[in-house]
Image 1: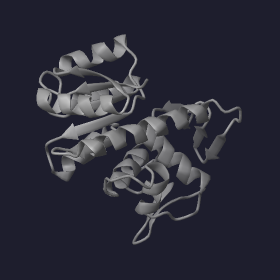
Image 2 (image 1 turned 90 degrees about the vertical axis):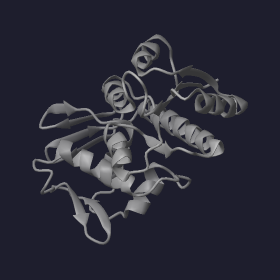
Image 3 (image 1 turned 90 degrees about the horizontal axis):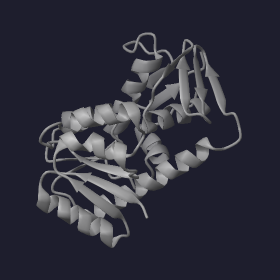
Length: 231
């Protein structure tokens, strides 16, 4: 049985999430204070974290940053805020997805299932026997061990950033639109908008480009999308 940690200070919303998840076969645990989240994650194994941004103690942004430095657990951020900058900030800190209040509980369950299934496929992919080494200029991607080296130094990538980078690298010199990248990485059923891709591309550029403001590896093809160049 998959286990979901719900970090939500509004007990009515937390119990609504819990009810729908348990009806769909998930085991859940609710935490209402951000200060307890890291400790619980270190003590118990969870398959996904539903993380509210406006938690007392440590907020969702702080927690997402700390968790992502140590763990690859899928993170679904929940926020009452509607501004794009808040969503972009969460994704930039390593969240896999976001959903805004008020939300359809059935949509929440669908997203939880999708992210757990995708994460399991990634773990299986890592255990494949092929080396899966991609060398592009000063960057080396090790698909099997899920590592990226830039100028000989390892650079950490959250799940979605790594997936986007590998997809573009395996299809070098081909232009992909934001919508095509969303379909490949997040799946056809993804409900969010394509600005998610822009956020992830910018984060990747900061890690692999010598000058992220003048990118040479991942190029923006205006009006068309993005292309990874073999340099």
